[in-house]
Image 1 (cartoon, rainbow, N blue to C red):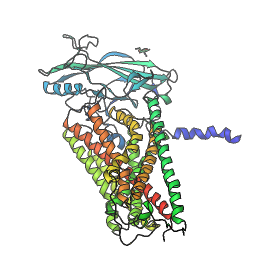
Image 2 (cartoon, rainbow, N blue to C red; image 1 turned 135 degrees about the vertical axis):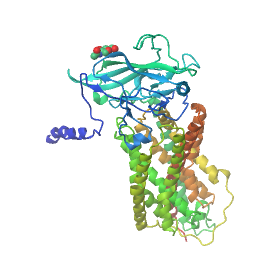
Image 3 (cartoon, protein in one colour; image 1 turned 90 degrees about the vertical axis):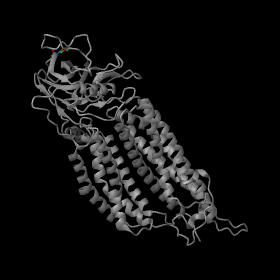
Image 4 (cartoon, rainbow, N blue to C red; image 1 turned 180 degrees about the horizontal axis):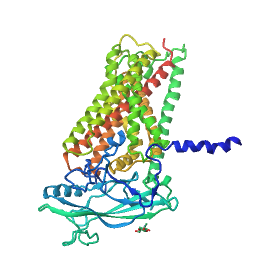
Length: 622
Ligand SMILES: *[C@@H]1O[C@H](CO)[C@@H](O)[C@H](O)[C@H]1NC(C)=O
């Protein structure tokens, strides 16, 4: 009784403690100034995506109006910068509850050289992104499938190249609608921001005021210099949405049915697989084991066959134990990072009002779980009988981070040359390097020593002195073929969710179906583990005992499909015009496939190792 009376009280400070900085509500008085921040211009995903490069709002070639005294950079989180946000002040003057019509922002002039640049960006469907009271500018849309109304924060069009083909018109007037929620007669909160851009040839000769209702569109001429006005109107629209729910309209989950369908689909696959493995491991094998172990004194003495035959070989050391253990270590590190990030996301810690919080949490998890890579690598290496532990320690700590940073660094160089704003600024790079050197690397070393203390896993059977001959095996058990075949199922389980993640990534929309993503991830982990164990069982039955690398390759086989899918997505959904965009796309695709390979491979290897240990410790060897 007493407890239940106190519980709501206890919950109060907890609930308010959940507000991370920058997410507390802000009350505006009537007439109080509301800041408008501008973010980078990003390509919009309408039917096709034409570019992957974002541009600074104040890129001098755009000639957007600047605030008096120049724009001021806003501080942002690391993740937000990595995801391409560059947030600056703007000259818009908006006051709470004060409607205005056709206010002039500035008179801009675009020389003919830059007109071409702007027209090209219009043809590539670039969109502008404003941020008002932490909310992104959005368009109101209706989901064609469910009929629900939602706010699409993809940005709003820089111009219009559809009304008259080949003659792009510049949107130089913005109708800004701010939805407010009145707390009382004096305090108001912003709960929605809508921007509808228009093109209007508002310059009237003889007048110093723009005419925002002129019927002519405005085209930038590439033959002469252009003079025109930027203008805007503001309307405050009352709304019943309380402040706490203002993000709901933005976090629209497209086609929840398809998410469910795909999830159920994958669950069926996984159920089937787990059943298969259970069958194989517990029926066939227990039968085998009882037969192997039966003291059979009858005449037909049981010959060893199948996987039992190679009991003297399964724990024979594989080639390149160094590389294998480094890959298993780094893969486990990434698995851990993904799981913890997804759990954070699931519990709603990645609030959309903290821009870039997903990337920030990923980065923090990556830094802190450095110890996992050291631990997993040292134990794997010891188990594989390696004795060059110092080399192993150094390689575990620096090999893959260096590869990954080099790829990202190269792509960043490309962005710098394209003078795009997606390029990560020097300060951020320095911060990440510091995180790596000062926190992640020492943790990895600590994890390594901790792993050395635990030492190697003991193998349940001894290795025979003379290696057996390996009979020829069917084509589908050869390493590459097996990896490609084995990768189909984990990839198939993730495929639909991957489509949504890609669409929201390229559509510049936040992805918030984290529940689905989490379940999908679990399904993928289970599928990878079971498929690998199953394949390795077949491999051992074919008297091929070199399973270590095979299990890693089969587990990582989904990376092959991921890459192939990326190529297909590029061919069918994207039409990237510039070389830089292509390089970026394929660079990141390669990077993600590599990470997927490490993650899947180490799941496959670890699952198989324990399955094999279990298998061979249950037989009796004379
Ligand atoms: C502003 O204009 C909208 C319509 O455009 C109207 O509904 C609203 O009441 C006006 N607000 C004020 C404060 O005048």
